[in-house]
Length: 339
Image (cartoon, rainbow, N blue to C red):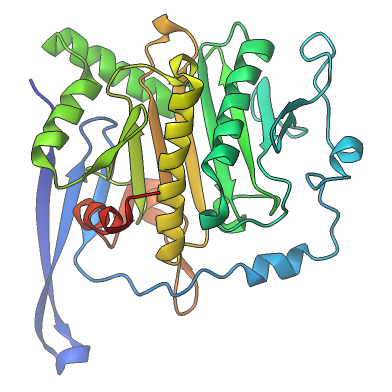
């Protein structure tokens, strides 16, 4: 059975007080993702304009607090790797500095500071800054976690996304066991291969390339798309058509990957998205079976009173509510899909 791109429609009606109590009907579109089995609800009423990106609130709260990631503080305030893992204590590459997370979520959980500058807008990141962070992640996985099989490079950009520090940084995680999301991706890829005798990601990319409505473009080793069933109002995804993962990409390919990330976060800034999360999922061993997937999702506070885009549907029903369709997102970002 090939991949299914299922959409169902539920329609409701009511007397509308904004239109003299005339009958009004509203359509709710429910999608099920063929890769992840995620379920999303695309609403027909519109998202309010978010306005210009503004980090003033977070910067005001941050004033007067010493930042451990700033130049001059790194040597005094961050942790060090064990001598048998990294004899020099810290990983360094360009502006990036890597060290163990003092509040770890897993046996290997490191922090990778990306820039010397304390506050960086999404459009101000350079491809080389992002590439140095990704290359440092590769170095850390190779040196510190030789037995791990699964990994993720994660990014909480600003406080609404879970960022505990304004200063830009990745968090990387590696383990012998996959996360719940990774387990589901592995299980579905294996089931597809057994059922269809082919690769799930290749089949998905072939369908999306023919459909074109959610296809954004290829940069470096990955293809960027708007996922069929998004996990946020803004959700952009990168897949590897070669089947390779982060550990198999060359430095030049990783720079290409970083260019795509920069295009996405620059687009989010242009649409007034104050914060976002990123997760790059990759196998560390060829036999691990985890397909490469990178997702960048918005963390929007909807005006005028700052309503969080995450509500009970996502937290307690495992379904995402979206006000924009992935087709609209893909069409929009393609207007500025360039370096």
